[in-house]
Length: 144
Image 1 (cartoon, rainbow, N blue to C red):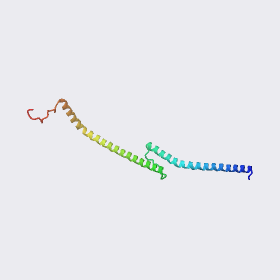
Image 2 (image 1 turned 60 degrees about the vertical axis):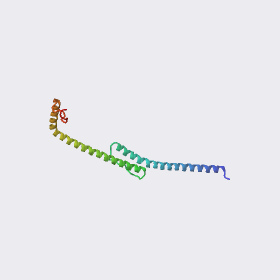
Image 3 (image 1 turned 180 degrees about the vertical axis):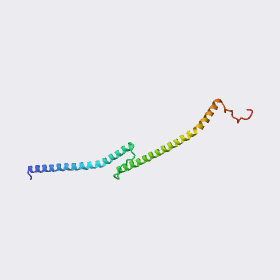
């Protein structure tokens, strides 16, 4: 049989080897986990920065589509949303410009028509105050 000292030495050597391999595997798994978490969090951080830019009013920014997974789909969706917001904003700006031009044209027309209107409005107002032109209706039959 084996001497006791030899068995204890082999056991310690095996224990040291297994401890070394365990630390090596823990280190390898740590790097793998770190890589995978970074591959998820980095694109999400980029999308968060893009969303913050959009919320600050910068509709020119685009989200980078770096993959075809859920994060890539989210980036494409953010880009479509930004395009729709930009279109809506441009349409509103165009409508405001059109309305402003219409109001300016209307103001110019009223300015040119106002002297005539104000004279006739004043005369109608004066006639109403004086009771002129307030004749009873003439559609009643005679004698009533």
